[in-house]
Image (cartoon, rainbow, N blue to C red; front, side, top):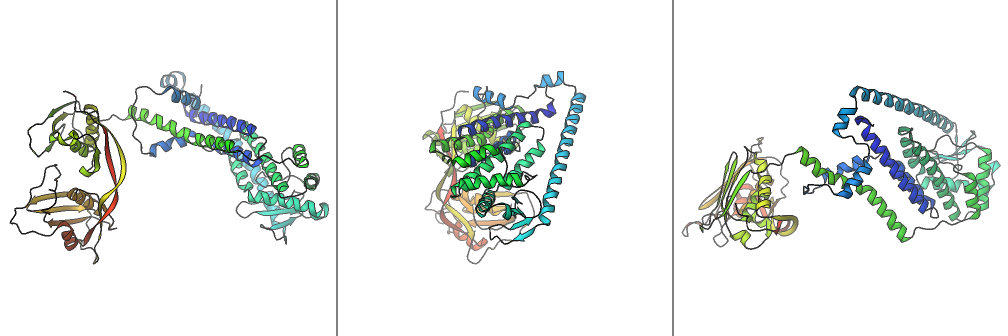
Amino acid sequence: MIPTVLSPLANHLWQSTLFFVAAWLVTLALKKNRAAVRYLIWLAASVKFLMPFSLLSTISDYLEWRPVLVSRQPHFTHVVDEISRPFVLSAAASIQTIDPSSSSYLFLILFSLWFCGFLLSLVFLFRSLHRIRAIRRGARLLDYHLSIPVMSSSARLEPGVFGICKPVLLLPLDITARLTAEQLESVLAHELCHVRRRDNLTAAIHMVVAKIFWFHPLVWWIGTQLVAERERACDEEVIRLARDPHVYAEAILNVCKLYLESPLACVSGVTGADLKRRIAAIVANRRAQRLSLTKKLLLASAGLAALTAPVVIGVDHSPTVHAQSVVTPAFEAASIKPNRSGRAGGGLNLLPARIKIVNSSLKFCIQMAWNVKDFQVSGGEDWTGSERYDIDAVAAGPFKAAELRTMLQALLSDRFGLVIHRETRDKAGYVLVTARNGPKLPAPIDDPDVMLGRTSAGDITLKAKSATMEQLATTLSSTLGAAVIDRTGIEGRFDVSLEWAPDPTSQPLVTKSGTPAPMPPPDATPGPSIFTALQQKLGLKLEARKVPVEIIVIDHADRPSKN
């Protein structure tokens, strides 16, 4: 039985092992292809040990999606989850069979063992690093005119590239006397191939994996495969550069006979891997096959599946978690009746545990439920905007204002069979910018309590207390019946007051309650328009442009079911 505290680690190791098996099968299928491809696959298997699936699963929390709660989890996803997380205890089992004290002792024992092994591996690592650095400090610079510095050392180590950010090629002092010029050129070509491939960096990444997961035998086996494929990849590249295979094979054999292998895996040398197989492959001069289009597509699909599967599983589990931990507020009872009075006006009455919507259309209810304006609701049959209803909904107790929209959305979906989706469209609107002579705003204030109000009696007056420019633009959007986007770049909150005369030739403006605002009397002296008032009073300007607007599209709606 796996203790609860160790269950995540056990699942991670199990998932990484499955990933290793998949990588091994893929490399078997690509054994006739280039070694560089197999090297990348083994590197991915190594990096997987540093990336728990749970980390990828949490990405789903940041995706904007709207789950539909289902009563039963899909069978396929359940099977995948059981495979990916075999070491999960039920609540009853964890309470009945595991003693918390014994679990803690077991964890401390296992952690102590791991930490001792980790420290021991670090000791060997630092000893090897110290040795290589001492060799480098005692080396002298050679004039080889290569892409990286070349240094000569009296140590009996094989030629190798040391360093990641600023690599240096270390050569034995007597190598020019022991190798022919052609053999030395082949060795240098091999080392420069390591530099181009960034082999020291990838080897260092696996070194980190090996130190953390020193207890896992597959991690060490992956390290062996990485070294083997790394050297084969460089062998293939050297032969591709038209080097004589026999001369190159002799150079490798001479280096192996005369010099010691580097003590660090992240120092790329010439030796390594199965020497007999390497020499046989070099002398045979077998050319590796390039990946066909089919194999490229299969590899890309496998990589994409490895990255997206944990995210999909996380998305699938998110609704279940939310359903268990968060209770969605809803109305206990609701009455919806058609209103055939023929009146134009409607209204909203909000009580602590009750809401009454009078003489309003479905589209107006959608505006309230999704906090959008009239021009942001599209689709639906004619009756969704023309037929009026009285809605009286009662909750079990007082609800917060922030919960009201969620409760209304659930009510409309249930009683009207409402199905909607969101999309963004470019529509005619306005951009709020500063006028040519600059803004004429009052001094900014530090008051978080925002109050926006508009009255209409002849001229229309807008008063905003402690409002940002974005909030002012939103209020102007309601007035103009079109999207208004703030592009002033002005920060802070302001108390502003604005008065203008409605345009008698335009359609009546709509108030917040959804009723038409009264028009001024015919003999009234026309005042400034909203555009002029903004410029004269606040030094702001509205420019007509196409702007992106989020739209609520009605996909389906039925007349409400009977109460």
